[in-house]
Image 1 (cartoon, rainbow, N blue to C red):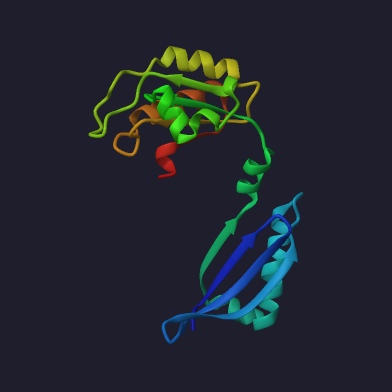
Image 2 (image 1 turned 45 degrees about the vertical axis):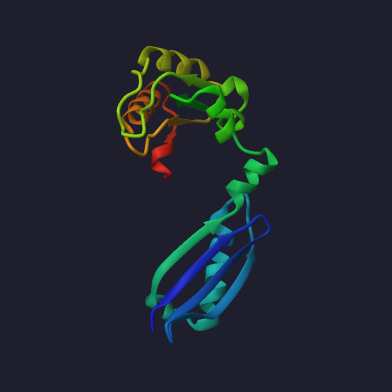
Length: 185
């Protein structure tokens, strides 16, 4: 009997649940446990919840865990509550109306949003080239004010080249992490 371990780190508690995936084709709860979320070191609360759930079924059954699934609401809560570190956002190929409609115009503080030409059409063809010099200049100017960058290019799921070029350049000149929208889709 293979087990599945689910872990959810929330704002107050970290929950762990063991499921048996072999009960008449339906996952059945074998054991569950809860521990306080330790915000200063999340791994402590996770370890406590996992330890408690394994204690309920016997630690020897840990070897039968075939899947571990981890989720958290902490990042969502931080965004909703306005906590977290500031990030710079580069958008390529979006009109002002598209930035507004998609929520990109309010995703970061207005002075941390850089909207530029670039992006691709729905077929993956380049709409206009990137201005790499302008990207480098703006990233360097923002680097002391942000802890990370994001890049979003129109139709990047069809052709991620502009996001990849911009992300590599921003990383190289700032040393900061960069997330590209095509990596999330």
